[in-house]
Amino acid sequence: MKIYTKTGDKGETSLFGGSRVKKYDLRIEAYGTVDELNSHIGLIRDQKIDSKTFDALIKIQNNLFTLGAMLATPSNKEKLKNGKDRLKISKINNEVIQFLEHEIDQMNISLQPMTSFILPGGNTVVSFCHIARCVCRRAERITVELNENELINNNILIYLNRLSDYLFVLARKLTLDNHAIEIPWNSKK
Image 1 (spheres, rainbow, N blue to C red):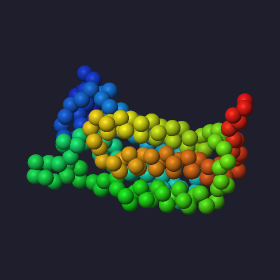
Image 2: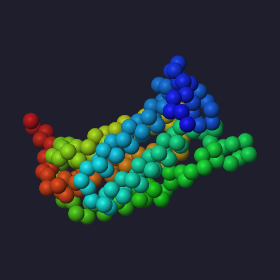
Image 3: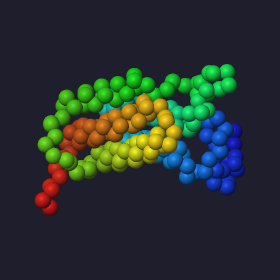
């Protein structure tokens, strides 16, 4: 299989189902930002982290590929003419959302309650988590805007929202694991 197809040389790309759109189309922005997020999560995974977190991040990365494929499929192209799903993959569902919620709850057990906002940073892997969280929030904002133009699967929005929460709590957990210091926001400076 060739990597280059030359079909995008004039600023257009194909969605699943064959529709051609400009490369700046909101749908492309949405799944492109999810792809960027996935790369940032890979960077977190490449750091010194525990095996449970590593495995969770692999699962999340796989889910983000699924989510990207769902975003790359316009709602009017989700079904084939015979009524079957175009994407023959598991979709983002309540089970993967509940996985994130469970992971958040488990990490929170060992964390001190927050009394103020905290400044991102303190350790390289913690900073990577905060960058990924910000990219996740951007993906969520773009996807919300896409949803206003063309309804998408609501689980996508829920997953992105929960994932940003997960990444925030993971940053706090990795701060603790690495004996780093959480610096509270000083609103008077």
